[in-house]
Structures are given as C-alpha cells and as structure tokens.
Amino acid sequence: MTGRAQSLEAHLQRELGKVLFGVQDVIHEVCIALLGRGHVLLEGPPGVGKTLLGKSFAQTLGGNYRRVQGTADLMPADITGVHVYNAGRAAFEFQPGPVFADVLLVDEINRSGPKTQSALLEAMQERQVTVDRETFPLTEDFLVVATQNPGEFEGTYPLPESQLDRFLLSATMSYPHKESEARVVSAYNLPIPDAPADAAESTIVALPAGAVREAQAELAQVHLAPELVAYALDIATASREHSQTSLGLSTRGVVALTRCARIKAALDGAEYVVPDHVKRVAPWVLNHRLVIAPNAALEGAEAPQLVEQILAEVPIPR
Picture 1 (cartoon, one colour):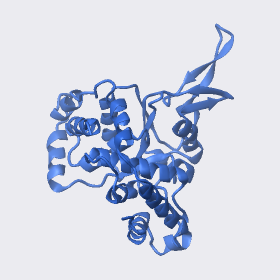
Picture 2 (cartoon, helix red, strand yellow):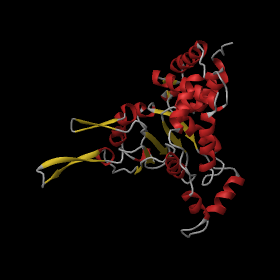
Picture 3 (cartoon, one colour):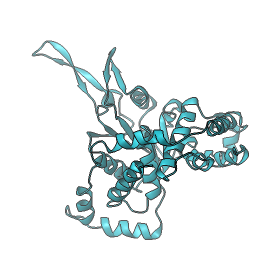
Picture 4 (cartoon, one colour):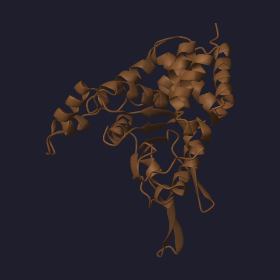
C-alpha cells in the first residue's frame, strides 16, 4: 500500500484540528465518506460544532461551497433553483440554486419540511437536478454534508427513509470531553474578528489537486474476499428479518457497508478487509438506515443497540 488514503486523512485531521477539538473520530468518518464518494449526515445537539465541521471540511476540499439553512418555510426551489423571466430576451432563464456546488452544507436539514427535503433525492443519488422537465447535471464530486438535530427536539421533521438511505454514513457529534471543551472555550471566547479561532480557520490548507482521486484509485488494491461480501449480506438479512425492525439494510446500504469497510482497511494500512473492518463501520452505515418497528419503539428500542445485537448474532467468517 502506498498510503495515499492515510496521507489524505492525516491532512484532514491536521487542518480540521485547527478549529475543531476532540472530534478525531468524526473526522475519520467524514474522510471515509469523502473517499467513498458518499454523503454524510452529522447528528447531535445544537452547539457542538456540526456546522463548523461542515464548513471547515468544505474549505479543505477547495471547491465551490454553498450553504442552506433548514427552516420550516424553506421551499424546494430555494435549493434547486428556479426559472426566471428575462424581459430583455423575452425568455425564461434558469437561475441555479445552492445545490449547484461541489460541497453543499444543509444545516439542520430536519427543520425543513418533507417536501423540501425530497428536493435533494435526485441530486444525492444521480448528481443531477430536474426543474420544469429540464435536467441539469451537478459536478462529478458533488457532496452533501447535512447536520441534524435529535428528532425529539421542537420543530423537527423526520427525514424520509429514501433520503436517509442516500447518506453513505452518519456520524454522531456529542458533547466533548472536559479537556477538549476547555480548548474550545479558550479559543472561542473572544468577541473580536481577529480572535485565534478565526485566524486558525483562515489558515486551513486545501488538499492538493488530485489527492482525493489518487486515494480513491488506491482503494482497488485493497482485497475484499467473497466471504466478507457474504458476511455483509448476512448482516443485511439479519437486519431485515429482525423482529424489532420494520425496515432493514437496503441493497444500497450493503454496497455502502462493503465500500466503507474497504476504505477503513486502507486507512488502517491493511492490504485486505477483515471482519473487524466490517464491524467497525457497520454502526455508521446502519444506525440511520434501520427503521424501528412501532411496538419496539414503544418499548424503548433504538437503532444503535439493535445494530450491536445483530453484529453479535451474525456468525463471523473464518
């Protein structure tokens, strides 16, 4: 292994570590999503740095970055764009929305209504947008970073299953450890423009041109044995047949599981995928995709615990 994937993660950890403290594990997950050409969902309570992570991550990629704030009155056209009449040309012209970017940060996505949330379905899966029967392509590297508040918070709308399934993985940002939180307070407590935190954010260095493509090409060298594919399929089957789920892992989810396992192996410097790689990434891939059955939800069942149970019950290939 040439270690291009590891070099890419080291760059992200170093640059994002200038403005975010104690979130190395989350940056690791975001790196997997980047290498896997997938979208990432950041979950957690307000005020823990989800938006800052998304914004700073976009800076490291160096591409065109746009941001959308999820609100109850946000409309689909506010994301995709709209045709506007040009009196001078006597014709309608398309005004592209913020979705036409390399990195789109959708902040508090679950504070927008279901109709607006669905405006991202085509963009996230096919990297294109259809408006008024006209299709417009997005950039090849289009990436959505969405933040989400816990579902029990006031003014939130649950994301539809079809949209959740389009996120390659989900990462949870919780309250930091005391030492990391003390660093946050020290860096961000000055209400002046040239505070140390602002200066650090302005010095974030973008990834070298072609670094992501080179690291992605390296992934083909990581061997994924048929037994590991069968293991991922067994996990998917167990999630679908579990008595406490009404919706298990989709075929898209199985692809995401094996892809993330391969990337995890590359980031660990391994030449082949082992069951531990699959088990390590499984919660990131499954937690947001599993739909708990109503009776199980009433009894307090939650996706993370079910994923742990499934992984414990599915036989590990030898």
